[in-house]
Image (cartoon, rainbow, N blue to C red; front, top):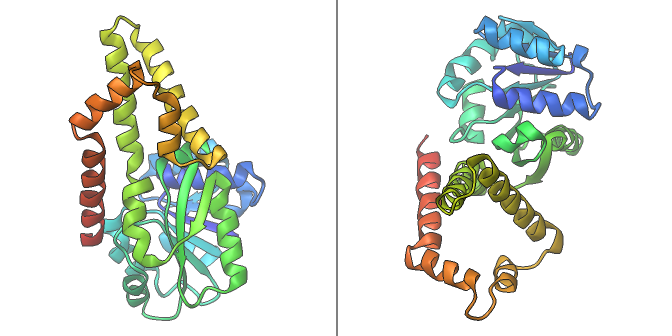
Length: 264
């Protein structure tokens, strides 16, 4: 097996789905383990991969191993597979709070580890992933890891000290954006727009605005100013948002998010 997953939840499914869709690794060369039979059967039916209930089997067979269990299960999972993990394998982790130093200590031997932080838009091929390789990862390993991680969105290498900021700005932020879209739709409904149509307008506006930032490379403030005509509707809405502490609330939310990430 070229690729193995321990844990076959939503994020694992997003990763394997993107890799299969891009033709990087065929489904028959991917194996996943999960203690829940329904979970492993779901990915088997959805993607056509091989599945097992045995974590050690995955660790023994895979060249690249993705630890896609919840952070609270990392210690016991690594304890279970550590003797099966080889020095020529590469391990990709996706858990907040689990540092490279902690991971290396858990394995108790030199292991090629790439710590990552993806986000849920990976489910639709628009993820944003940060990657931090440890000292045992070669340039060839790193290039291959980035190829895999880029199969479901964008990926950038960042220094590990920035990971908690990554959790705040991209890992958790889809929740903030979904709340924004819901609030925008509520406002439209209050003005008489049908609910389904309100979600469509709000979501497309957010999607298009994000695309403008990425494609024009203009400062978000400059793009905001382009919409705000003197004494117009938009600047009045911006005034109310600022009066309500909109930007400060977002900043404080991200700082709280990063603090929890550091404490995990």
